[in-house]
Length: 123
Image (cartoon, rainbow, N blue to C red):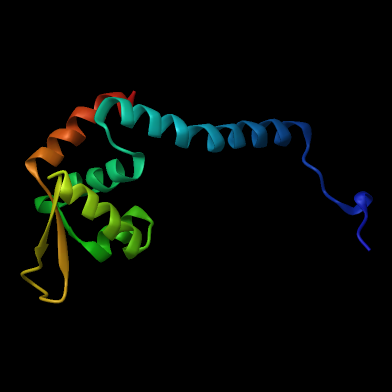
């Protein structure tokens, strides 16, 4: 049986670093969400989705590739793209190279929203 004597605890400097990291991990998502809602009327994940599209060639990516880059499931991405489509920020288009694939394309209004939110987000 492994008792407390066998547990490796963090050294004091490791504990300080760990607590600082956890503080960031816990506070950062809320801070990002708040700033983006205030400055752009967007949540962090929709902004992230549009930012990825803004950096892509032709401001377009296959939905599967966009989901991979965004670190989410295709299902979650599809819901976000639907909401962004309703706002006129993203469009879905057929992929010319592969009829089975669908592209997400950032619209001019979507790009303007990303560009408008970027200064506050960067700060």
